[in-house]
Length: 407
Image 1 (tube, rainbow, N blue to C red):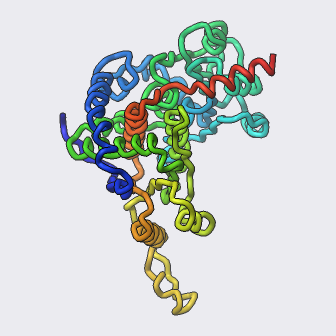
Image 2: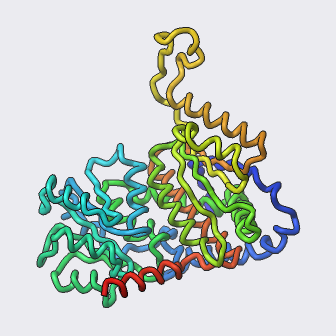
Image 3: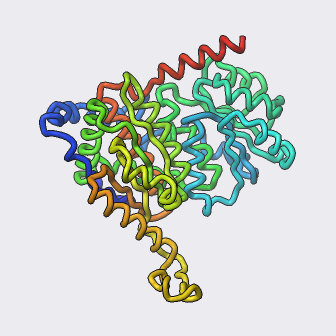
């Protein structure tokens, strides 16, 4: 396979000393068969990871979206994996995007009323996404927006093509419809229509987003993925750790980490196992949560997200006197990076579990690589721990009970 240059620097985990060789031996034997299956899926249509394939064909012609490119404001309506991926892309690449995007990802009447008051609804493009086509929150928000009308030219509906409310209303009112593939679950759908349609309308290069998807099958990255998943799977089984904390020093990644939170929580949180993934904005949380992280129980794995970009203006601290001369001629990014390095030093000293993901830039290739790494890491970890990474049985129970209460 052609060698691809990584856009992310991956640090080795600092927590393998918590495991014994005998704990890893059995899991290592299982790993090759799981990886072979994923590679087979990437090269076989109608499989979950086929969206990683360069020959993956979208369920629509990109030229058919041309008529929607005139809209300067776009409202995306969805829940969970249907919307978190596109919101992560928008937040990460916002400086490149010339349009206004609003993400309606909860039941929030105030947001809906603000849209109605401040925007002309016929001047807004609405993208409605639900794999099942019957997500209660998505349908409720769609009804509340009161935008449905025959042959409306400002609505795109994405759902499975079967007897569900979204598909039926699209058919009845002759609305622009794109099929959501039934074999790609919402939280793994960012490289399919659910993530690609909003990204195209953002004016982004989809080929660049997908450029680094195969990087984890190169020798060095392949070994890193193998080691990471084997370790995580064993921690799931042994229950050494109950939390994964995302320490985020890159503000552009904030929404991506909400996507990752859902991916990990829904894929791994079963059979009494799982990690509670939480997002911690740094260095702000140095002054609120750091004492707990360093002095509290060692039940946490820390994922540090940082950047090696340092192109920002340097500050002049002389105006505040000589006591702050250590800050003089430093950029804000340098100061933030120093705080991160100090934290890592403390983690090492106190034998606190962590690993770091350092970004080389803010661009399509980086966000695509991050999406693919964590989908693979999560999926493989689940399989190694004998967990189904695709279902959410307890969530389905709540959906059924909610419907009964409302009936």
